[in-house]
Length: 239
Image (tube, rainbow, N blue to C red; front, side, top):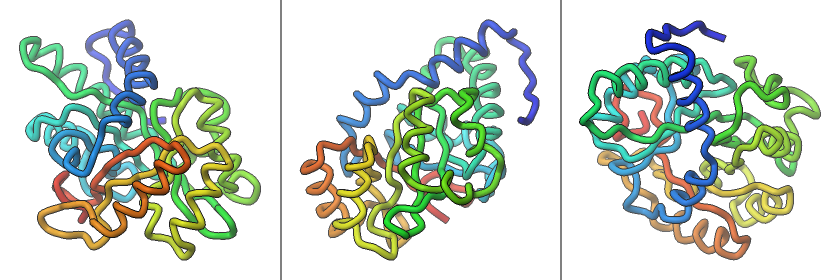
């Protein structure tokens, strides 16, 4: 794990890490997000140079503050290094700007998994990154064999007290109508309902897919999330 500078002391950073695992508040947010929430209010699908993104963690946080986000998560592939770097920088910024509101920041990750023989991505939020169940998924590479099965990925996130979400459910070889019911059966908590499948500029959710996923989410009583899936230099776009 990448070392981070902690000028504020361990007590402050430990408190911030616990806040990043506040699943109760995160659930409340997921219960309120809609097609208008992203990208200017909330963004729960973001990548940094710690996986396959172009932004340094500090740059990502700077943009989140400039945009005025209420809450966000860095979801690098199989890594929380970006999370730790961003958390340290954000806490220092908050210490230097006590009169300015800062966005809420949660732990996040994107894990490659197998669901019904199809490669999918599962997002984890609010989990304890130091929990033993997560170690195999924080090695910077896709898990293999049994560890890659969606049921085991979901279970690992739950064991670490986090929420598991099926990313961009209408983007896979199998349809959302097939994958979401199976994911729900395996215990997934939510789906990335509000997503832009055609990489539009400006970013906006895809109406047809959104309607379908909203209906499936309601049927299976799942939480809804939103995110730009940013890999480039602008949090308001995907690429």
